[in-house]
Image (cartoon, rainbow over all chains, first blue to last red; front, side, top):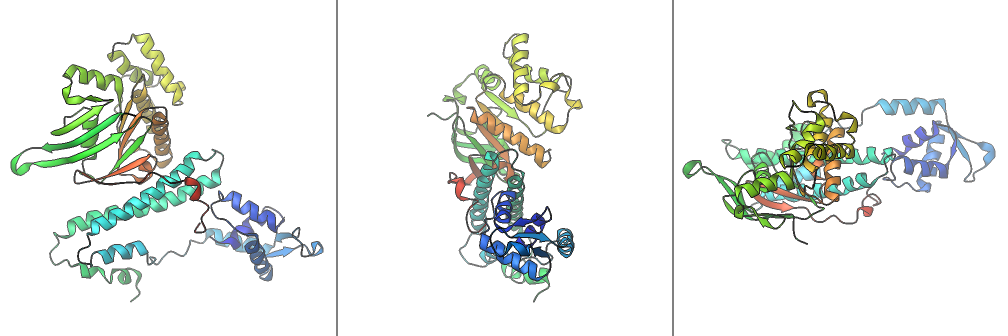
Length: 192
Length: 240
């Protein structure tokens, strides 16, 4: 989560002081990402140093000091909104590594490893769903944040389901050996 | 509290000899009133067989199935048919509405089959449609409705009257995620008002609405989720 760009977005609506920025950040993101006020001021100082925001000189350094976005800040914000997140290279996902390693360890039943993670993920999804179910209908920020997390977790569950099915069929493949999976991540990411 | 649905040592075998298939093996499952249980598992894991046996559409090879305390195999075929008509509501992926009947007629049909006079059946059916936000669609035919609306009509039909057991097989399968969520919210609401629900699905987002998720694999129950902890702790941790 880019606190820097979230603050620019809030300032794009008009000048605001630090404490108000902190409160608005939390309420607009469904209060899922707590942000302390110190973090807000540190980020504002950096934004000001980079010429993306400017402050009200007359207000002094007190908590009521107003910040406003500059035209350079507007440009930076627009560019950030339209730039895809850096996700070209598959992350070294701990869960993927655990499943790959489970294939190699004698005496470990990989389907049981997969099921343990599947259950944990579904339990997390139950908790998020409960939060969504109990949320007020107008709390759009919370619904969007919770949906994003639910879709992400569902994706992981679907990967586990696919892995389970693929491994169920793998014994039928001639010449398949668990050790072959070891360098798979390097091949996908192009890093050796 | 007695369970609304209980499966004790239920197994189901199709065929015999070399073609024998063990669709379900030694299933133990109990669902209380007010509770919604989701059954998850890959294709061929026995999910749909479990549902048809729970709904007395099919008989177990061995084991006992109890609905509201009554053992199904001990009932006459007529009593079982009455139980299906009166106490059990079914929701299927493809809605299974009758195309020649309006929404209201589809919902009233099980009541009429059960001997209610037409006007009582119609009034009760309309009330169920109204609860599901479909009052203005009562006179529409299924072909004139969206997928989400059709599934809501099917839910109205499944909960109409005094039904106590709600069985759903991939109820959001053909719907987009927003309509799918509307459907599962309605099923959950029906369970909250006292029905016992079983939802079979391979969709984790749908299953996550259940109080409990049971995992099937090769006809066996291999795992289930723990009761949910305090949800308040979820969104305030430092990791988020």
